[in-house]
Amino acid sequence: MSAKLKLIQDMLEPIVHSLGCELWGVDYISQGRHSTLRIYIDKEDGVSVDDCAAVSHQISGILDVEDPISGEYVLEVSSPGMDRPLFKLEQFAAYQGNKVQIKLRIPFEGRRNFKGVLNGVEGDDILLVVDDEEFLLPIDLIDRAQVVPQF
Image (cartoon, rainbow, N blue to C red; front, side, top):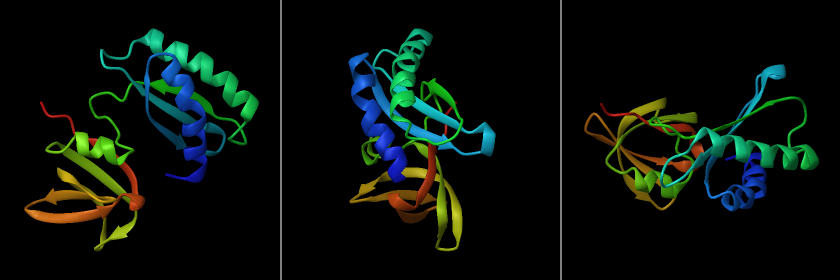
């Protein structure tokens, strides 16, 4: 996670918690004038549209005052959904046994994209089994990770 996203997460977490939600993760997609700051929230009994609206209203004021991101961007507040992104080691550990898709920032053993069964966490590494081959992927190399919904 970049230093900027960590700063935003630390700034917003108490606000999200005060509204009865968990800050699942923060994602920033920089696309020039069409950049998006996506805040994922979660609740034990599920996230409603009203939860998203309340969180959006509260954090937009803080973001306007603190201005952690230069330039224009769209703020989105969302539930992580079924294909939930994974940001923290605890989240990876909680989804052990599930199929996940991982994209790395830089190649690891010659590849950047992995899709397999999450076999656990060892230290700061993610243990992933892809076609009977085990990979130990450092969390610092992960650009994007998400659960693959099982139907």
